[in-house]
Image (tube, rainbow, N blue to C red; front, side, top):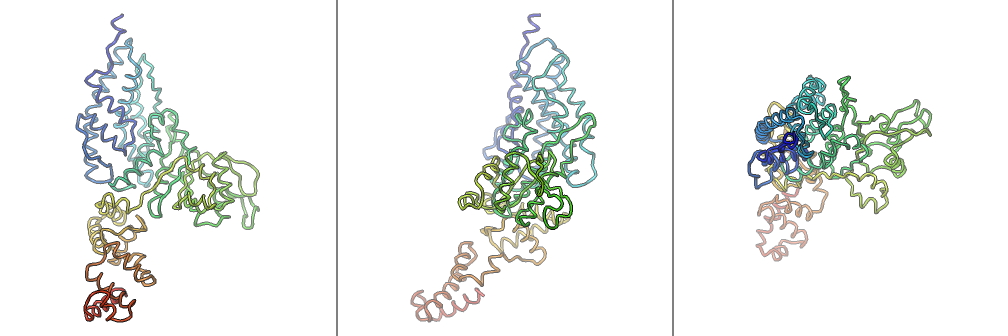
Length: 522
């Protein structure tokens, strides 16, 4: 009896490296370099010198499939062996840390067994395509959970409930779909954005999220900052549509429809009165035109939902005060009512303004900002992404052309990329960001060319500024540069002779160059 109770370690020393690596992999942010490190450690491979970026590329999709297959071949027999050992040696005692490691391995395997079905269900729900509902996966999931987590005669330390793991797994698949499929690019700024969105949903500690933060994230307001056209609403949608939704094992249904629980409000597009009515609702007769009671978005938003306030920097001071109360007390009142109502959802806000400047110039309340900034994400500009990885331009054009015409995206992508490189050059800084790139691609498809806004207004701008812009973007060859400069010097000096002396050129050369320069500037 003494020998039976003094059991050997649950996980053999030879299995410790892979077990510890998989345990770290289960709880890490999949969009950080650490994921690659843990995968390599689990497979016994050297960690690549260059940090890999997990992005939406066909070759990466193939590589990822091979890695997941190899990991499953190593993890599944280990979990089966440990499960048999725990079941057969009922009186043996093991350290809690060993049992937690086993549970992490079982979580990895359980997720791997069912993530494809849950992913198909998540994509079908988002796109409206026919597919088995996520609850159809539940019977097989429950069977596998009971096999690995319900050990007769043992109480496992993690206290995992099958319905909770099922809900988190479905949430992970929804979040991954939004982040991986829609935030594209292999640059470091794009990779950091994907990792930041994941953290907004699950925090930096997924183990802690599993245990007690999963139903508290609505209390954290997310503020998204960045230039116009950098995908702030895309980020907000990914966060808002990836919230935790509880699963009821009795009815075998989720507690709500995550697709219908995202409410975007563009504050810059509405008058203050309409904003207040949209957000808070109103009572009949509270103002001219209020012919019936109206339920606002704050009241409509369920516990699992999110209200997205785009262009929060445009909000009027009086409404800033009302919104501050919502964030402080989680309560609000309809216009014309004194009754206080509870807000149970999540607030996501976005702005392209410099909030420090707005606060300094008293256009935005500092106390409201400090209620908004519990979770801040900055979306990188397109020029930042292309500066880090110029080749991403082709991947982004392909992403756009696939959405426009799924049948022949390669041809459209090739034509658009060729025109952009010839018509705009490699150094064009895309002031309109991804939104401008998308419209540029559409222009090239329709008209065979694209004229940036800066070019459209050049005739109204100072010739020197136009020349400096073209030089900065390397748009001119040597002849064009000399011709336009000669025209400007002639205009300044008033005669070809004076211009020739300043330029150190022959009078006839200056005359010919100036004429060519004026034609180029028209």
